[in-house]
Length: 193
Image (cartoon, rainbow, N blue to C red; front, side):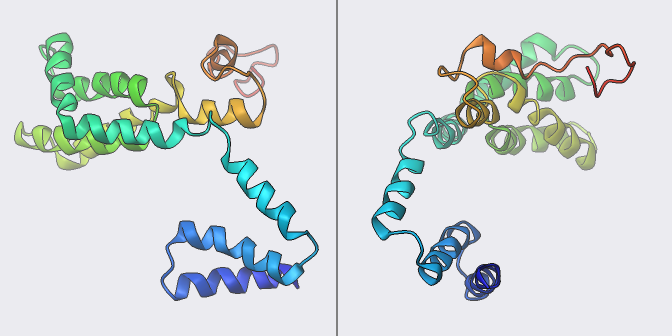
């Protein structure tokens, strides 16, 4: 009965045009009102406790930092710097795309901010230089996914908070868990390593 109420209320919110983020928040609230087993004061306390985590506040601020850097022209300066590093190689703009994504990921920690900031500048530049638009988009999308493994990383921060791996989100212990081993283990497969 409660699951049916969740599904119906979620579908209703989506049909009337409520944004998905708000629909996901309102749906459990409707189920809570229908169930009524938890005292209202306890529910309000749990909601506030879930939001009152200073470490998780880093997530929207990383995304905000990426947007501010893109609007402020830092992305163009990073392109110029990366051009000095790898621009002389054959296919230099593709290398610049990868290197700037590494720098940008180290600053923001968000793949989405990396894609929007770097892609808005480098995809048109790559198209102007004669690169295929599909290749330019693929390089940008692929290189921006490096963001979640370069500290400070939003998934690592969330993992550290929820898994209580480390009290300090930027500690070496937390980021050493994200290193992918390249050598196989005793059984020979990469899954067990």
